[in-house]
Structures are given as C-alpha cells and as structure tokens.
Image (cartoon, rainbow, N blue to C red; front, side):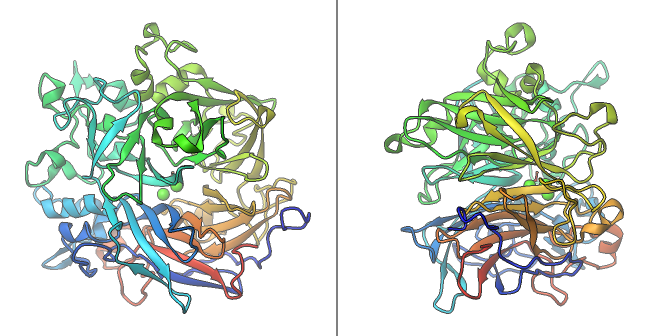
Length: 610
Ligand code: FEO
Ligand code: CA
Ligand code: CA
Ligand code: CA
C-alpha cells in the first residue's frame, strides 16, 4: 500500500547522531542483542570466556559479524536459520596469558618471533560463517535453538572450486594437486542470497593474510595474481604462518617461492581466495563451493536481480579497493525454477562497468578473445582472465570507482544502487561525473537502470542518488543539503526491503571516527531512504568504534536483524596497553567488547521502517 500511495515510505522519527557506547533506535522500537562472538551454538556448547581454546571457538559464534541472511524454516517468520559472516578478528581481545589479556601493540602476541598454535587456531576458527537456528518465543524474545543444521565454516573448512578456474594451473597446491579443492574462506564481508535459497559469502581483504617476498635481481618479483591484489611483501596481518608448529594449514600463508615446483610450495595458495563462496544452510554436510566465474577481487558482496523464468540470471558485485570496479555476471543458461542451482553461476559472462560522463554506461565483457583479452596481451585462457580479474577490467577500460561496496536492487523498478564508500586518493585531475569529488572523504551512492529494464543488457543509464557529507558538502537526490536527521559519511552496506525502502549502513574507519573531517557524524549508523522521494532518515546508531553491517528481515518484515561489528576498534595500542578497551558493548561494566546481532522490532508489531 505504501508503495502506491505517493506518500513517504518512511514513518519513524529519526534518531540523533550518537557518541555513546550503546545502540539507539526510533521511539516505538525495541532492540535485543543475540549471538555475540563466542556464544556456543554446537558440539559440547563451551561457554564464552576470553580464554576459550581454538577447539572451543569452532563450536561458538565467530567474531566481527558482517553480511547476514535469515532463511525461514517452512516460510515461518518466527523460526529460521540465521547465517552470519565473520569478517575478521581482534587478537588483542582473544587471548589470555598468565598476566591477563595479551594487551598492547599489534605485534605483542608474537613471542620470540613465533605465535602459539592454539591462538592461531582460535583466530582461524573465529573467521568464516555461522549457521544458527533461532526462534521467537511467546514473549517475543529470540533464542538460539540446538539443531543439526547449526554449523561453523572457518578458515580451515574444506571447499571445492567450481567454474573456469577449477583444475587450472593457477590453483594447483600441495593440498590439492588437481587444483580442485581449497582450505577455508577468509575475510567474509557482505553476502548474498541466491534465488534457490542458498547463501553466498564474499572474500574481501584476503590478500592481507598472505605474504610473498619473492625477488629477482634484488627487486620484488610477485606474480601478477598476487601483486595486483597487494599481497604484502613483508608481514602478514596476523602472522599465522609463524605458528609454532610446522602444520601445512598454517605455513601456507607464506606464499614465497621455496621450491622449484608449485606443487611443493605455497605460491598458489593466495589464488584460492578472492571468490564468492556458496553455502547451503539447509544441508550441513554440503561442501561449500567457490564460484570462480564471478571473478576474483576484494569481493564486497553480491546482489541478484530478480530471477525471471527463461531469462539469464544476473548478479552484481563490487571490488572494494580504491580505483577498483563494479561487475555483473550474466548466466549462459536461462534461469528456470525447475533447474535452478549453483551450476548457473559456473557458466556465463562476467562484465565490468564503464560509466560515461554523459549519464550512459556500458558493460564490457571479460571474456577470453574479446575486448583485447588475448594471449598477446597476457590473457591465455578464461582461467587467466578470472584469476586476474582486476588486470582484465583495467585492460578493457572500466571506470575506476571510489571503493565499490554493497549493491542493492530496487524491487519495484529494478534500479541498481551501489555504495562508493570513499577515496581520499582521487586527485582533482582524476575526477569524473560518476566519481565527482577529489579527496572523497564522505562517499556517495550511484544508481543505474539497465537498457529496456533488461538486467542482461550491455548498456545502462546512471545518476547519483546521494552524495555523503556534512551540511556543506552532502546533497540528496533533490539537491537539498543533508541535515541533522540524515548527515552521514562512508556508505557501505545497502539493502532493499520488500516495501522498497533502501537501508544504508555507514563505515567511517575506526581510526577516523569522531575526529577531524568525520567529527560531525558521530558513531557509525544505519539510515533508511525512500528512493522515490530521495528522503533519508537516520534509523539506528551503534556503540563506540564499531560499524553497522549486515541486514535482513523475517519474511513478514516485522523482525529485522542488523550486525554490530568491531565495537572498541578505535582504541589505540597505547590505550590498550593501559587496559582501556574503548567500548564495553554489549554487556557494559568492564566487559570485553564483542560483535553481535541486533534484533529490531516495533512495539506495535508493525513492519520495521514503515
Ligand atoms: Fe568489509 Fe568493504 O567492507
Ligand atoms: Ca562492508
Ligand atoms: Ca570494515
Ligand atoms: Ca567498509
């Protein structure tokens, strides 16, 4: 009804900017916190303590909650499988020594240049994905339910590779000499749900987990499939390869050349990451599958266009790094409900977007033999194109964007919206109409409609939906300044609910929050927009140091789930060494801060946001 009345789709009172260590929602709304990091969900259900073992962590909710989807059981809105990505970890909060938490500088958990194997195991097991059955009780509260489908997928879970890269020489490893299998998933940022009711987890900042210090004639000599993704030459982010046992599963993160043949070293291990991973939450024994036809980059997430019988299946994905690109995949086979499944994602065309300054756009195919992707130009097979997606996209002339984060497809119109979170490195002479600001601190949201409303089209028309910023620089669709009800910066998560409301989540970096240029915006927040009128209101503010990630609802739209990631992450090493944690959310007192899921409902039981 609200879609056709011509009135605003938004009917809540905006919440003010917050600098408090808590969650605020509009009047008439309620919040419950569920599934914090360390909550036991399977096996012997080990209770949370900061010194849980690596084995314990494999039976508990992971850390740093991100993308999420509610899979209703039998269509119910009070019983389902909640699937949650766990993007990364905070080792400063995870390990206890004789003297207490291993506090201090980033490297302080290295002891004599080594890491304790069980600490590394715990960090690996806090990554990945949780599948948890949750149910609403008669009093309206949601509880965790013991269920055989409860599952943890981690940095160690065996997975399959599918699509054109499977079996290619780029992914042959000691672990999988045939190049068909992979250990684990990493850096799972946003997510997507397929039309056949499975989950896709994105692999975003996986490159930082590896290192490669290969040199030739004294100069750095990484293969293109490492260097274009900034695999470090020096330290890995967590030093997992320095675990004090020589286990292959740990050592693999040093991808430097150690032996003459790739089967005897770990050079191809980074090539097993940077993909979209399909997980079937209803089949706990199903092996997750990395769908290589969707390309390899810092995958933020994925969003599907509505699946139409007899038409190709289409999905969109962003590469979240400065000056990187927006992609879409179009299946070769038409979608049919009777034959829908992951195989549709293994055969098709990957395109990259060019935004022309006149408001038109083109999708450029990344297909071997097309658009100059030939062996003379360094691309000998589709596997080589896909392993080097960034290089291929650059070669065909795609538009360099201001960090493409999440996308969302408007249910009524099919318009596609994408967050461009920020890019302070863009120089004045690099500005274009789709990335209109040099030193883009605040980000913006671009949107487009495909030619003839056909998601498989190769042409589109685009405009800017909103330009983030303070009152001096932020502008909405109608050209009005943003104001105290909707000032925001650094849009990241985007999601459309069934009523056509666009939910916008912010991710001002934890190091910059509430400081300098970002002082006016307060803590990271979630806003809601009416795409028809351009109106935007702030719906939720989160605690100190966190970002808001992941959003999904029950089928009836009356219960919303939202994630709070990395509370307290703004705490400096010096503050940490003094025992200051920056946030104590959600438990308060002196508790260690923990990422967790919010359950948001209306006191009158109505649809959230309406
Ligand atoms: Fe993990 Fe691009 O946010
Ligand atoms: Ca994100
Ligand atoms: Ca982040
Ligand atoms: Ca982000």
